[in-house]
Image (cartoon, rainbow, N blue to C red):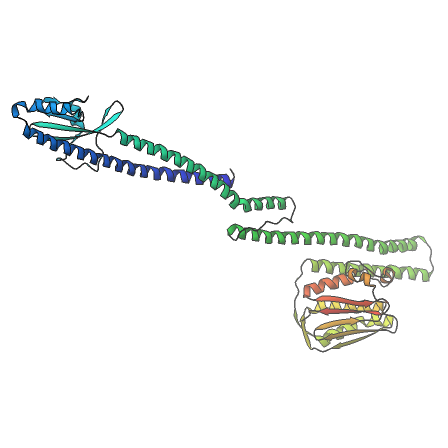
Length: 455
């Protein structure tokens, strides 16, 4: 059973029970009050009869009093009054015997019964109560018809039942309408969760109130947003990994084909000593290129997997001296000078990672520079800048140069032993360090890389 039906059932049962209990209590009180009023009226009527009888008894003679009294009441057609003297019936035009009257009679001199139910005599469709009193040698009985009182009680009960049933139906309709509106957010949440279970993470729930359900809808939307972002990130990551593996396979294919070809030539063809040396050097250089490619791939995977960044104070002078020594061979090969300047003594970052970033940027700048050119590296006011006067980068390609395996000049990059992973690795490292990288370049005039966010 659905929640809405359960709640409607609970509300209906609670309402019905409340009406039954309340109606029973109310009907009991009303019935008792109506009967009490009837008993009071019967008692007043009886008192009048008893007083009238006593007056008449004093006026008639003793030898004629029975017949006279009977005649008087017969002429008055007063069937409600019954008179007995000892065991003799003086006046009784009812259908009840003395025993029946006595069994139902209440005598005010015995006890006050105004608060209790009287025993009632029934004849045909009528109901009667009996008040009794002894006057001299006479037993007097006064009947009072309460048929109308019971009729009004039954009518009141029927009316209450009809009203209660109508109210119960109204309560059910109102509860169904109200609960449908109140529980609509839960239905929307259920539909949204079903959509999410089916793979649709874009579904959101309308927030229509500020109560607990509204708060639940807000939290659900926040959760859905986080799940969608995570799903999107996972999808993008999978796409990037797929692309990376495809590019890696492509990059590995060329050197492996060349290595296999030169190795086959060495095994099957008689070459001069110079040709053998050239083939072995090419195999050696391509093997080194594969090693570098493997190391960079391992670094990318390691950083993508969430390796921790360890930040500490790094001496800037020692950092740049180590970088100068590292790039010394490369700058001699290209006849390029590297000038470094800084205005701080210490920086707080991961020394190994920032060193890899700077070396990679300087290495790219050296490769892009012409012989006799200069690469400027500066650290001023917390901003790292690497600038060259090389071939530059076309504006249309600046947004793509940090993608894995992307190379602006593929022939030059392969000749230099590159694989297009350097800037991808640099970007990933800077993201781990909480820094950003900006490229400013003009084709044929040079490139400047600006890094901000290093403490």
